[in-house]
Length: 141
Image: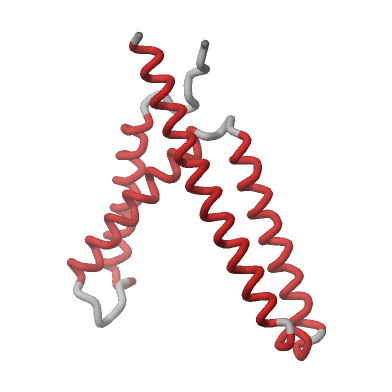
């Protein structure tokens, strides 16, 4: 069985470079005063570094899953969320009383779509990294 090479040949190197850029940006923003006033700077920088590391691996995982069908479903869920937000804004603009009456249904539907998008995002990232490891193992044989 022939596997196509991944979109990014060296994803660990790309993840570390992306992490370095994100962490540098986060550090500069923290030093320039964007951190919350009642938080220890070291704790804030540590939590930011962990977040940047996770974000870099998720970003590269999405790039690795570029050819997968699950990425199409992820884009579709995000498009449905955008259309839903646009509808909520229109309802709020033209009839605010019905918006408040519909608020429980709106919050429920938003939580369902956020949960679905998170699950699809994790599936897309996992399938991208799994495809890379499968390609790498087949290449070493």
